[in-house]
Image 1 (spheres, rainbow, N blue to C red):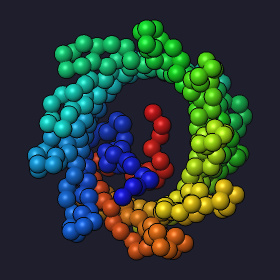
Image 2 (cartoon, helix red, strand yellow):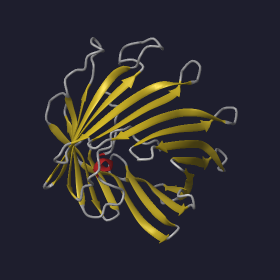
Image 3 (cartoon, rainbow, N blue to C red):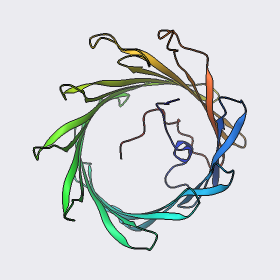
Length: 327
């Protein structure tokens, strides 16, 4: 079964710089036999986070561990270093990634960020793997962010492989915004061609936030950008602080059906995310409803996919319900 929302448990509740110890446990529902199994545990302390997963043979093995530290900071910006260690299915260290990021403020209220990524193998040999430049400018109610990503080519020299352009416009009251992000990748003719586009509108109310995101990707025949997916997320906050988010996922056609190109998008999945805070932590439950092949216009029963339990210092922000950010 394919889900359209894949978010590591650690990123749902834990921020990148946790200030105190916290533990996140993910329970995944057995859709065939019922019940729940613990599939991963993430533990976080000051600037350190580890994620442990359960392997097929029942052993607990590390999946990823990262540390982040502040190298320097002044009134104009900061320099940070993040070290990420990744492990294979047997729990052995497979690779280490080190990212050094320098961020500087600009007079217009924007910023200039330069990140360099180094990757090393199990023998400790480290090589520069990526350079990323992100420049953000602010003009009135419009914020523009341009990103350039360089990676080594076949001959080892760095070359630009991807460019991103993002423009966000907000209303004067900051309650709504529209963001258009385009990703350009190296084309066969040596130039850059728009490979993806995402348009997002967000409207915040007293107790409800609506986020409407539409993705476009090149079509198979013409190569021109075509509608790929739309997600309408509605988050409602109750008086007790609990949150319930409904995400309607639309596609050109329901799974298992072929539809005319000019037909209206079809609802192919509904996601229900509830977040409840208690005296010992936060419980977040993710469930879905999907239409069947025989009834493409009717959503089936609600099925719980997983449940994430955080104890300790858990962030109070809303769960992430959009697709994972492109890396």
